[in-house]
Image (cartoon, helix red, strand yellow):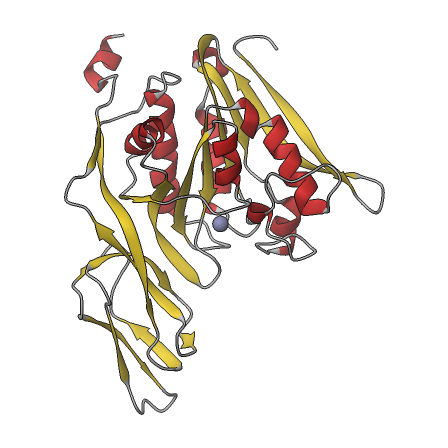
Length: 321
Ligand SMILES: [Zn+2]
């Protein structure tokens, strides 16, 4: 493929019952300068749409003639889920628990295998874009293995409001990346089935900064810092009923603080929802109907030392060029 050009591909996933092909839309941007291969993917859970828009805006602004390395962008991994407004594939399988997959398995397994062999295994770094599951919302944050220094530096460059250390779940795209020496970070933010402007712009800036960190882009980057957390905990509903939360995403709460209330339809027998640890709200339930024990607020325990990243190309140097 010619340097400085882009190419649109449909990665073959499986044959459909009516005879057509199920494919994953992919754009390959082959830069003019040398550099690493990086992929950006979204909607592996078909109803998580903020990342779709992040990927589309990225495609609209990156010029392969000015790029270093190769950028692989797949804005819509789970086309079936997207059409059905569902996290899953039609058989109920979760594509993000189907890696590494196989070219002889069921649909989810075939799609996972195709994406792994055609995209993930060719890349040194991957950014997989997510939102909270339906009925919940997440503070924009990165989840990554911060024990790996290379991944940690990429996460620092992303500069999300919070960076959560986590090991990958079995069967996930992130776990599959580990085996092919691809450092995969997950960006989480906002709600399913919505576009949220601040989550989208934070995510787009983060992706740009990772590309700048890797020497692929030179514009529109700035130094950042991010709160680090190595541990998180869910606060659960003390009883079933109707939930009213009094915290917001990003709020810091102390252990034992009242952060909401659950009562019945007539307001009887109210029970306080209390923070079980001191931490920052990174996820919360939006659906007020709860059962006893439902996870309602996700708290991250921040560390004292933030992640810092210095932009390699300052704005003033950029202007002189
Ligand atoms: Zn997801």
